[in-house]
View 1 (cartoon, rainbow, N blue to C red):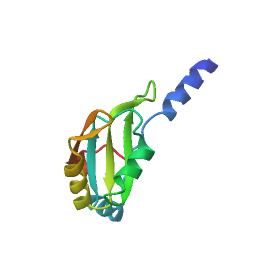
View 2 (view 1 turned 45 degrees about the horizontal axis):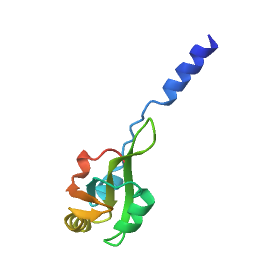
View 3 (view 1 turned 60 degrees about the horizontal axis):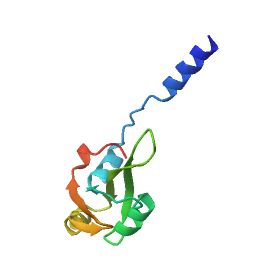
View 4 (view 1 turned 60 degrees about the vertical axis):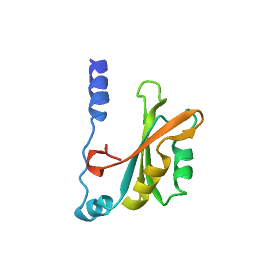
Length: 117
């Protein structure tokens, strides 16, 4: 019986909660630009990405997709910039960029289709 209660509390604590942004916060986020980066080479993780893409402008958030099972990188990420124009320039510049024997695929994406950061 004790095991049953532990498992219930474990699963209830893992439920995802949706958070609503205040109108002011959502308007600020709508001014930001986000790029998708695919075909990311091994060893180019959050810290390295933030440092590399900061040459284009202020990076506000980096989200690297990781496997739930192993924690390893899935090979794609989203980088959020303070300005939409900077994100567009970074995506155009870095698309088909050769990095560690892999061609990066970058494109500017709408914030609406981006998973929560």
